[in-house]
Length: 633
Image 1 (cartoon, rainbow, N blue to C red):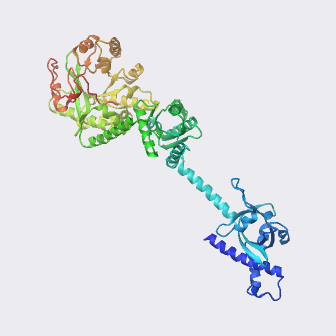
Image 2 (image 1 turned 120 degrees about the vertical axis):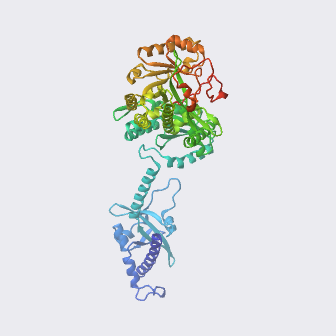
């Protein structure tokens, strides 16, 4: 609308200007010719009072023949000075385009119209320059061809446009960059990655997508707070960016996830080197708020065109490879392979089925006796999680426990086992059985993220059970792993509160993790359970014999009970008896059984090991020598 109004105004101004120059040339004759009879002093006054610059130009000489007062005021010159100047001395073209030859200025002026005005810089007498636009209309004066030119000051509009452009660029940057780290964000990736793929397709080159996920970053947020977590993320972003080339793109997807795009990849070794640089850079300690934090990253890599033809496939497959890196111990990188996609789909299916199992009572708890080797009496029962799928039967715990941890289901599952074990113990007592302590496996996540002592206190009071009838089994990784100091302190406080309640503490799978004598002393452990990997070849392997002997001797001096797991034969039992081990657990004594079949163990009489106990064999198809693993975390 403004452009149309300007065009109409310029047209009117030029018409008046044309009449004015004719009148000036004719020196206002007393009797103007017939073709000028329609133009009177009113039109001349309009030209004189026209608010914007209007002029008449001779294209042959490039001289200005006439200019209205508004134009003279704008330039700061007199009419005589203007007439003595060439048009190019008063109005200069915009910056020339080096890519294309410029037309002569007069030619460009002649082509200027209301639809396509010519952008010029007006040179004022005081040395200033103003942005203007001009339009031109031809005039035929007798045999002379002149140009009527209207000039409009657009400097204010240009300033507004420049300001709006800056704001637009600022908003665009905010929309496509992460406010915390300053890196490009997910929106930027969505706009950039398809173009990068198309460029790689045209050039027939390889493009790599690296999907990064920080390891255990949630522990930092939970233990140190989100402010510290944000500062850590900023440091991580800087380190990732510093390891990459200038042409590589580093994107923060959100949370603790990043994506790196490598262009022009020459070989898989180049990608491996880049991923290794990131792993090395992030594994170095970082100082945040005066404290040292250590974080690592798992990286998945997908290559175009081998691993995907579009953005969706590349991101999905690099994410799949990243989870493979998690499964392989974290702090490493993995290249995508089709087998990974199959495992991911299986993992997703297990997670979905496991969520259904929680709500549809497919989960159950079975119990396996812990036996006094000398008296062969049952001194405790270990609660073991079982999942019976309606279509696939019993699912082995090693197939779904890790999925439960990654999906955040390990906490509700652990609470289910705790609730069921307490309820079953109460039912056994009501049936007149001589109840024994029940050992319950607790994951590291439960230990850190739930108020375990408060939950146990509440449940035992609710059911009238003494907390001393419970034993908490923790894996070495849950207790001894070198995690952030505050998390360790929180776990230690939780264990101390459990001991105050009277709950016994056992370390499961001892010898396979981060064993530390100082922790055994500090955490006041009641029981050590020797992992079955040391017990299996105890009779024939001298190394296993030495390890088991050392554990038993150490525990005796620390007044800690020892339970040997995985006892399947008489020679193993006899060797443990000779070494001074007090307690054992395994298929030689009994298989895990449902709660209603456990009363046979709770009569305070020795087990008859000469007869096969009619316990339920949950996984006959796996063979009698294979132990069914308990819930571990």
